[in-house]
Image 1 (cartoon, rainbow, N blue to C red):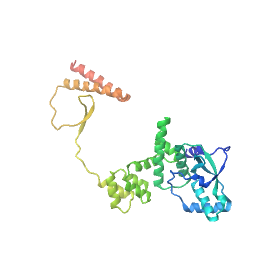
Image 2 (tube, helix red, strand yellow):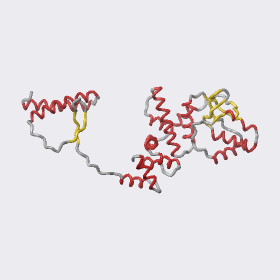
Image 3 (cartoon, rainbow, N blue to C red):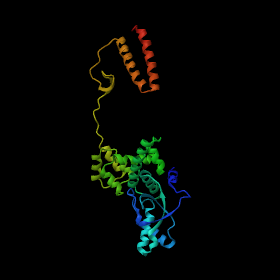
Image 4 (tube, rainbow, N blue to C red):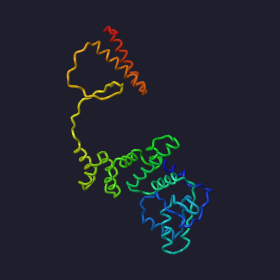
Length: 305
């Protein structure tokens, strides 16, 4: 699916290539992805030996000015070729000019980067964050179907579980954990394990630990477990008809006639039936109605009106 998404942005055969001066092109402000200088050098050598073989992609942002959408490595390699030779031919670049909105260009950049090059886990997390914001906005404006996590997974050719891991780290990990991820000192899987803890506990682990293996994190998490005195609770309707929790008293219940108990049970079932019917729990409603029938039968046997 990722390839299909990318294909939507690819140039049509009939679209013409324009020669654009490099000084009329601004680099994309959304491109936070790391630049492989070795790759730039190697591509520069290739350009000097064989020429510039592949057009970049830009969009016009003002009269005679363009923003780069795809091809930053190639553009930087071209500039390096000029620095080496001072040949004027390396100051213009073949480019497709696309008509994209800000959001479309942003999405195009992320997908192009993630599908074409290897990136760090931190960069992938940032990509998931930004696509999440873009797709949330699109769903609101265009009412498109599908879960955002699924949309991101399809766009980036990732498993949904992978996207979920990046989302978890993005939303729950502390700044200290994210910084370790940025420095590639912790794996995204270990960061996700830490993200289960409160952020102050995450920071405590980061400060006190020298390595961040998953087993070490699991041991730390287990050491944080505190056995609480959990009192037994029950659900009941309050005076306004809302479900609330209350602790079950240790005081023994008063002896009551079976008829009173059945009558109270029936009244509670009637209140519960209204609540369940309102939220359309069809199977549960059917079961409740069967219980009410049994109560009717028991009431008749006991002579309860």
